[in-house]
Image 1 (cartoon, protein in one colour):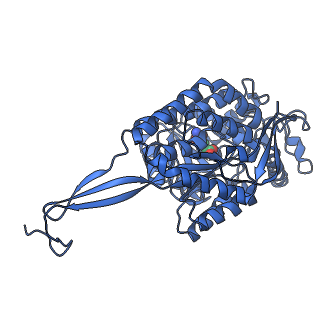
Image 2 (cartoon, helix red, strand yellow):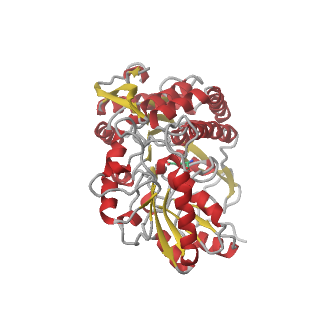
Image 3 (spheres, protein in one colour):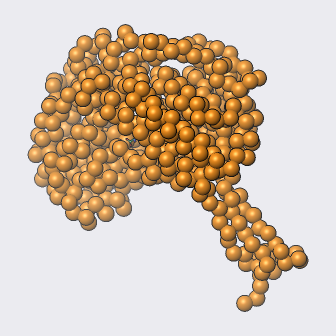
Length: 507
Ligand code: UN1
């Protein structure tokens, strides 16, 4: 059942958009199944959306924050009522197992629940002045218009991490979702729109990379956009950061990861194997928080690797509508890149695959089932990966993990930080000293103890450092700093001109 949409229909009255081709999203588990054909806009269409958003924003900001919170609550209820349908579409369009897709939709509901309350809390402060008869205050004010550009591996939950707080804070939002997940994004947009947001306050724009960059550049230049939120690759994040920097803007960047998991001699090995299996292969390794390298102590290396390869061999991979560890890769473009990667791995490594070796000459040996039907790949574990290896240093975005040995904890921490990313991390140990030492030494924004590198909860700060981002944080109350700016106010009721620093009351 293809879904046809035009961009122009999403724009507020008066805005215009040219159609710049169409994009087709396919079911990655069944390439013959076309999920959506979506018309793309050009750079001018992107700019028109930001202009319409700017026109709508002051009216929305004038709505009291608790009332905006009620609209957010309605979004949550509407999404919850459509949970199974939206999750089924996510499964069909990006191949995420249905149970995970349900969890993803639940994350939108959780985010709405959290920000409903925040509408009654957007606190400022009363601050003492250094002078008598004078009072100082702080207020949170909306930034204005947010341009949000998101990936398709979490086609609805991660966008909601931007959309919900940005709207709650009184901003208008122009959202550019991943083209290969356009139907899921459109369905989510329709649910949000049904909650009664004023016209123009939330806009969805389907555009390809060049149109998005071109449109963003123009919109930033014309001061139509006040905040850019981007989730995607580190390479694109760098370009967005550069573009924003030229306009003195600091974007919210959530980028890639090469997330380490340290297994110490004090670990519960069975638990660690379960954690590595889910972290490395859940969502086919296509989460930004997916496990990249297991850094395992010499003393437990052999036992861990044997148990892990056994668990990998027993895992079910296949139709994401069923109870599987993971389904296909997200979309053909990701499969192409991953195949190139597998070819390289086949050339350079002895591979301990669950169900076969990756051949140097034929990367399609990596396939599960019929390569013409769906983008399914075997899980791969590569042992004894050296720290100067591509596999150790680069994000793979596929179902492959490396294993590297260490001797003492300081070395493990150094290895964990070596790739220069800093999103998520994990340590398996029953020794609290090791856990705290790891927490203090690792450069990641998120640390799990005896748990997966992935699976962040919706009300803790989410984000990374280094190549994983610019230190911005999403989720929970921390994200309010992305979508509001502090305004300071002083009020002098002394009846005379008091001069700061020069007129401080004598003690
Ligand atoms: C992402 O892959 O972009 O921590 C975000 C997790 C998810 C979010 C991942 N809740 O696995």
